[in-house]
Length: 277
Image 1 (cartoon, helix red, strand yellow):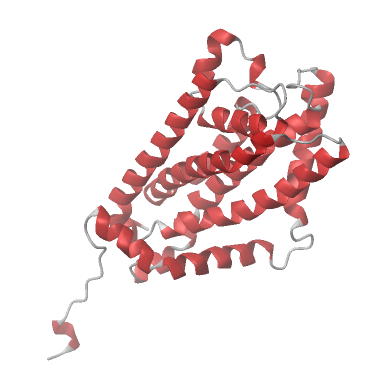
Image 2 (cartoon, rainbow, N blue to C red):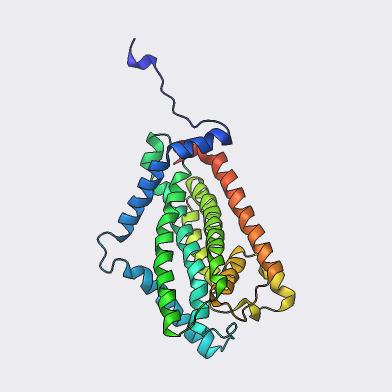
């Protein structure tokens, strides 16, 4: 027989159970791609890891001057205003970087997608790991600033991993949606930077969410990052900082719904990526 008599078809296994089994089988690929993205991010850069510190420092300075000095927005509890802003920059930078990296990840790896089969969800998921590295660097910066102001957190800091997971799930949900949509509609690569920039100002990063009138706080919490940011401040600032629990639970539900719907949509569109991309 000639080679022309055979057709080799590579396709994903059917069903969610087999899909998770495939993810476990390809776990080494996930680690490899995450490590590759980290190396590409910091290799052959002049400042290296310093870029991860420089960006939040510049945003911190701008927001402290605009909102703290000029607008004179109130802080929360006894926390100095720079600590208030930096506590919000931690989850926001994690979310924004993860969304930006994952939204373009499928297009960046188009050659791999068109040639071999593996669970495509590995690509946007591994792209989030780079943002987690940036988060750890910014967390070290937060520790240094708190030491400078001699501001110590209380036992609430033990709950911080919960809010970190919520931030990652929200970012993954957005990454699944945007990466899948970006394959079909390339215009979305222009929409994501606008969404990140717009979200920075409508989320309580440069100000406390307590400045929002009580009648609007529940509606404001439809932004899933509001609950995550408030949770970070509640965990890190401690003391007299209160958490608006109805708004927090609403933000969590929105974030989890965003993640689940993004996962379902990505899984549904995954079969056509190799043909469309």
